[in-house]
Amino acid sequence: FLNISDYIFTTKALAAGIKEINPIMNSLFTTNPMLALVFKLIAGFAVSYLMWSFRKKRKMLELSLFIILFYTVLTFYHIFNTFFVYRA
Image (cartoon, rainbow, N blue to C red; front, side, top):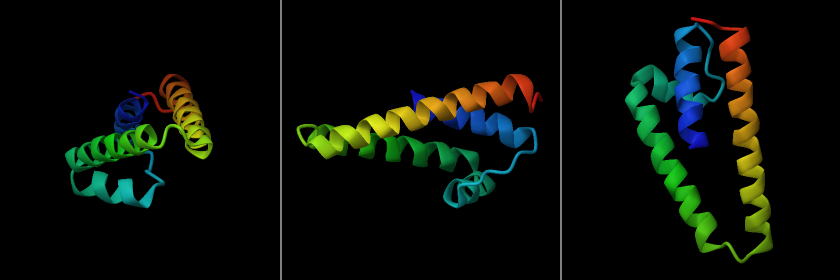
């Protein structure tokens, strides 16, 4: 869910003239936004699968918590910007 919300908010930010700073996603959004969505979905499922496969390893738990925290902070950043910075 957080990965998809990032896609939605990024699409809104790009429509408002903000530049994507991730070079891979920037290239995908420039080529075709649907490619960016497909990439995010595949990457999200792949990472989730790896996390689940190695869930008994402490380092994987730490990485999982970091990723969840990162996307949570990113989502709140997008929400803030949507309502206060780049209203389109």
